[in-house]
Length: 175
Image (cartoon, rainbow, N blue to C red):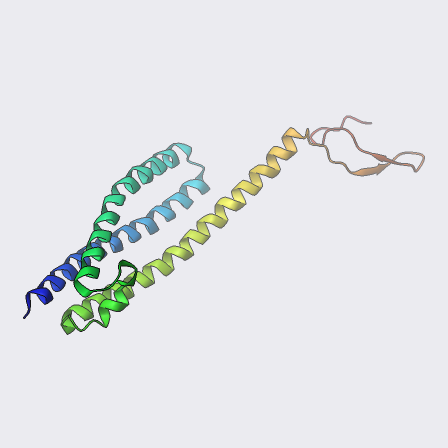
């Protein structure tokens, strides 16, 4: 076995460990989205604030992981003689520098990441739709309160003439 091939295999092993961390992170993100939706529905502002602060602090720590992944990709690109943008899991799957066992591991991680990302996109959309509906309901409620509840409906007087209703929708004291 050539030293360059061993180096590539070592880097692929490192990348596989990084991908395991990515899989764990995506699973955590799915869990956090479920928890976020649950707290929004329950209107638990205190727990929601704690969750959002935890997510914010966790994302800062994940940046180091992303930099590590990028450096491994850069080293793999140099070892395989291609550009950083060309190093993908698909490229590693078809690489002649790797034994079949490593290719199979890369294929397995790729499939797992694809399915998790598909699920994450679906959950993200569900969360976005829930938050969009909450914002719409809040906007309607605030508009009703701060526009003083004007109904702007037309009603008919005793003589049959139409009039614009100018009083509050909450209480109508007209007799």
